[in-house]
Length: 409
Image (cartoon, rainbow, N blue to C red; front, side, top):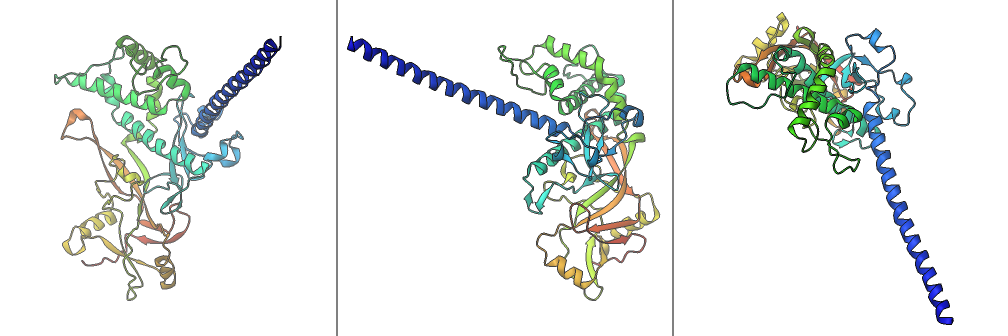
């Protein structure tokens, strides 16, 4: 009898312990799963907050004109504050399944070149949730901007696109085949980088083993999708969305040209010239790669070829083509006291800003079937401004390209 009692007591404690352990493991997994979902939801809200269309957008902006976000009218959702920034310009999407395209702006015009990547100091990234969210928005925004420019400028390719099936690789030199394949690639890449979570699961996700989860990859139908699924997803996408995307793309480089503010870092000020009361700086017409976060290194090539269209622009090109002025250094006059403060500021992040117009020069003739676009740019305003911060809020002064003093080499 006593033995049975001990056995019963032991069994009871054992079962309770197992139950507690099992419950603890279950709760731990449940908490982890819930945390993962919350993080995914937060990221989704953060990425899409500037992409949400206002109810009257289609009436006010029929061609998806870029709008500067009014931080006072932003949604009051928990993550809304993460992406509030008056320096952001957004092209709203015509379809809620695609995210809007956000880039930085200066005076209401898209900003390219050296951009504000949200540094707490010139050499330290802003790692706050707000800084991370803005940086992610910009990184993806400039990529999507470039994709839409290509779709618009290569719109003739879509006259050759096969809408009934994916065009396979071909070793023949059939121009129509090359055009169809390139057009299909442009559509797929844009869809993959601009689709919302719901869209991605529908077109780029292949659920594995009825798990409810999938790995999203840049292939129609997702990872290991068969040929039939790939074609099915592609055809469905083209029927539903291709015309919307083509129409939206006309907001980017309309008439094959667009105005930007071209920004470059002034890294090397040299020594202050007391005789001439200023620094000798380079004009923004000979592009030099800046730090890795500069958008001049994205490969878009908007600012690689300077072709002036004005008398002062031509004068700058002619002058700096001469051997004795080839460096393109010009005098930036500035008070000695201000110059001393700048020189002694180890966190300085000087920027030179010019308003330019970028023009599409068509497809590169070197390899026409690669459909690589080429561009030129010219100054649209003779006044060049110099700021001492990446946010372009602390103006130091300006240069007038009609009245420049050049430095001999």
